[in-house]
Length: 460
Ligand SMILES: *[C@@H]1O[C@H](CO)[C@@H](O)[C@H](O)[C@H]1NC(C)=O
Ligand SMILES: *[C@@H]1O[C@H](CO)[C@@H](O)[C@H](O)[C@H]1NC(C)=O
Ligand SMILES: *[C@@H]1O[C@H](CO)[C@@H](O)[C@H](O)[C@H]1NC(C)=O
Ligand SMILES: *[C@@H]1O[C@H](CO)[C@@H](O)[C@H](O)[C@H]1NC(C)=O
Ligand SMILES: *[C@@H]1O[C@H](CO)[C@@H](O)[C@H](O)[C@H]1NC(C)=O
Ligand SMILES: *[C@@H]1O[C@H](CO)[C@@H](O)[C@H](O)[C@H]1NC(C)=O
Ligand SMILES: *[C@@H]1O[C@H](CO)[C@@H](O)[C@H](O)[C@H]1NC(C)=O
Image (cartoon, rainbow, N blue to C red):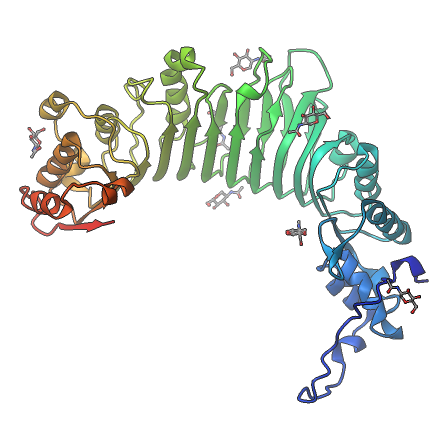
């Protein structure tokens, strides 16, 4: 039976139905659907609204009790106002109690207030053993979650956890049906304190793995076994922790095609069987006060890049790194398949190192021009192979009209013999300077062209 506490007691607002005369009164097809079908439909809307359907008519009073998906969101407005925290807790508890014997396929919890951490974990635990396929939790405060119940929930297909909690992992865990895993803010520690074996996370059918801002603090190295994984994305900053032991994260994913890394390169990412990776994004951001690390950086960058040398598409973005570590790209793998390359901060020297290692590059995008370029480097540099055969598109963004940038433009125009298009986007601040851009454009257009069909364009 319906509990009266679910009815919304608010006098100013009543549910409004179309009363306009123009609306033709049609047969109510929806209400004729079987209760289980209606329950299924209601599973896709916030639970609060699903329950409000009980006011539609007698026919609807119990329909919501056949829903199999629950979505709780404490910032959702209920008739124009937010529920009080106590009301919300009461509401969730009552719904869960009502559905205590039902199968719950999806459960979403989006919390912005601060709750008792055992309360939140009780809500989560109460739905785990009931055929749950999708679990989505978004909560900024601490939760005490029992990892055993989470990792024994073998029905899970999609797991999204954005919350502050510590998961204590056993040496082996497996989620046999999980296809999508996205975690952020989680602290992963190990149950066992031996250093010996790797900790294994086995996901036989996982397709997408995303981890952002998690702390990997296990005593053992971590081994992620995901034979069907297609996309792996990790954002990891070690400055978060002072732990001296930084486990390496090994990924066995022979079918991986998309790889994304964001971090400080402190923690080793080891890609086993990574030759299928075609698209990669590497973003390296360093703490200003960790300048002493710069020496190691070249080697760490090399280790990561050499594992993805089979990429066709590469975004390589370094922030606050190259000005301290000029020789970072001295050792580079050969990117034998690379056709698209995007860079942000780059010195001329580093740029030439990369170009010389990218024999079939088609598109080069410089997001912020080049920071410096030694004339000698350019005059003694041989022309990169891709300039002679494959480089067709050059996007030169953040152009500051510095001498060395003009030299680079001149070099590319003269030596890229199959170039089809060069687009120069002028840096924002030049709009407010007294540099005569028309003159600069004229000057560039007069540079000798190695490719007669190259189109040179300018945009602001
Ligand atoms: C709601 O309606 C009841 C009965 O009609 C009335 O006694 C009460 O004061 C109303 N409350 C508000 C908030 O208007
Ligand atoms: C929760 O509700 C707020 C306010 O309506 C909304 O902005 C947010 O996207 C919702 N969150 C989820 C996960 O649905
Ligand atoms: C997570 O919770 C712990 C313990 O309550 C707290 O010390 C820490 O600051 C929290 N972290 C975040 C990112 O909220
Ligand atoms: C973890 O892996 C690194 C290399 O990837 C290795 O040097 C180290 O010995 C491993 N540690 C343990 C505890 O197995
Ligand atoms: C791996 O990917 C290839 C090509 O995308 C596909 O043909 C193959 O079936 C995949 N392997 C598995 C085990 O799914
Ligand atoms: C993965 O790589 C290892 C060694 O590099 C090799 O022995 C193994 O056959 C590879 N497995 C697959 C599925 O490619
Ligand atoms: C073209 O490349 C050659 C060989 O590196 C170099 O000497 C020459 O200066 C380049 N042309 C221009 C216009 O920069």
